[in-house]
Length: 116
Image 1 (cartoon, rainbow, N blue to C red):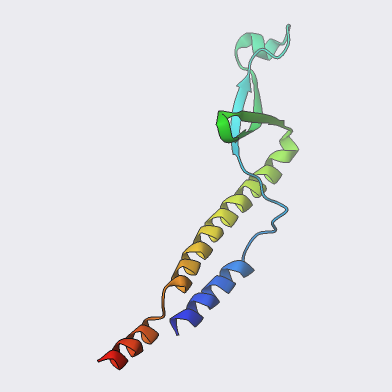
Image 2: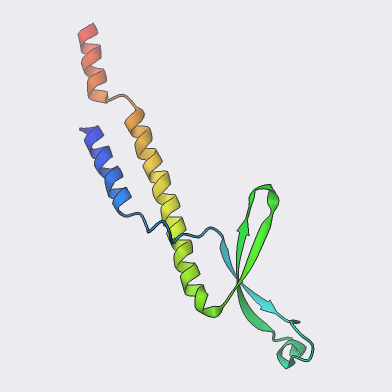
C-alpha cells in the first residue's frame, strides 16, 4: 500500500516537471554602470545606467557573467524559476526513491510473525 502511494506521488512529480530545455542555472543581478564611455552625462553625474547580469559559478571558483538585454530579462527569470522547480522536484523524487528502497513494513511484520 505504501509502495503504491509512493509510486503515485513520484509519477505526479514527474508530470509537473518543467520543460527541461528551458532551464538556466545562475543568479540574476541588477548592476549600475557609471563609466561606460567618456562624455556620458548620466555617468558624469553619478546616476549611471541600470544593467541586468546573469552570474554563473563553475567548479574551481570560476565565475562567468553575461550582460543581458532588457527584453531577455523575463525569459531569464522564467528559465531560472524552471531550474529551481526542477531542482526541488529532483530532490523530492530522490526522497521518494529512498522510501522505495526501504523494505515494505507489512512484509517485514509478516516475516517476523512467521519466525515466532
